[in-house]
Amino acid sequence: MRRPADTRPRFRRLLRRVGPLCGLLCVLTQGEMTLATERPIIIAHRGASAYLPEHTLPAKAMAHALKADFIEQDVVLTADGVPIVLHDIHLDSTTDVATVFPHRAREDGRFYAIDFTLAEIRQLRAHERRGADDKAVFPERFPAMKGLSGVPTLAEEIALIDGLNRSSDHRAGIYVEMKGSAFHHREGHDLPAAVMKVLSDGGWAEQRDLVFLQSFEPEALRQLKYKHKTVLPLIQLIAENAWDDSGTVDFDAMRSDEGLSTVAEYADGIGPWLMQLYTGVDHQGEPQLTDLASRARQRGLLVHPYTFRADQLPPGIESFEQLHRVFFQDLQVDGVFSDFPDRSRALSEEFTAQPSR
Ligand code: G3P
Ligand code: CA
Image (cartoon, rainbow, N blue to C red; front, side):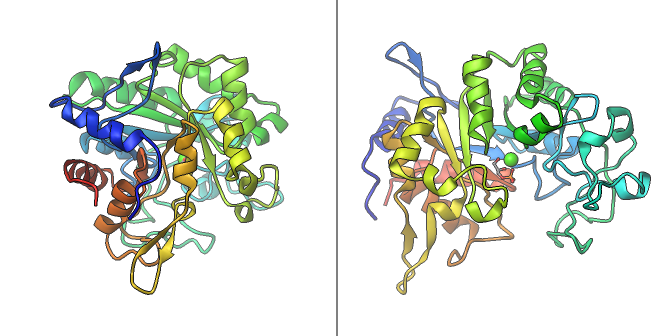
């Protein structure tokens, strides 16, 4: 397998030779802090979500105990403008809102977080994700009919991580996604501004080595960079056009050379869907890779694909270990979003210790 034509893998090997480095490493070059790390970082996707319901504080505490490098927060706003940690702009897939507030759905039948005050959301219990058929999306995971705990605010969650960083021997960062920034704008709310205020109040707004900000919406990232003048690294998430009927962002164009060059003007990295980097195996079982990661690196962009799940492997991949081998050794990505942060971290360490094939 040919290595992508860029310098980061060589740089990572150099870092490994520097000596025993604990945890993540940032280095100074040309007067600027770069984001190079000695091994790919592991981002606990919605917490340790393979084991506990996504975006609950127990899932975040477990992710910290499993030594995830970063813990992810998807963020939306309440009616009174409070950032809460929730994957969807709707409450119904992961909470008992339809039981507690049965008459509060909009015409489309969905219960929008932006229609509920924080006091109301505090009455809800979060559970493992259920589909439109009300069945568990991942039936082998935590029982989906059991509400576990409440929906946390962003401030509560980062206070938890901050506390664990002090009380334990592990230091985790946060990886905050603004969900539906344009939707919130239409509802009269400024999501990037609300998130930045919480980060600032919590003392995280300057911690470049401990915080990433991410969004699928270029406009949200541009606002963070140019209006809020954040120093925090920004990750442009890349979806498939087919997933979004609004068509407001052309993700095919974003993956072109010109599109990536534009992303590099305002962002520090990309977060592509993993199938945009790996497309399957050929008749001999060899992984088929795209050049997206290589072209992104040529523009100085980090590459953090999503989402690694041992119970939902991509076509042609036979094991979680093989999945990581392809992405860590063949594609040389800089980090991954994983529902299984413990297993991904162990594989990150294992493949970093091995020579590339
Ligand atoms: O933010 C990276 C990854 O989480 C994107 O997918 O839909 O799980 O937020 P999603
Ligand atoms: Ca996310």
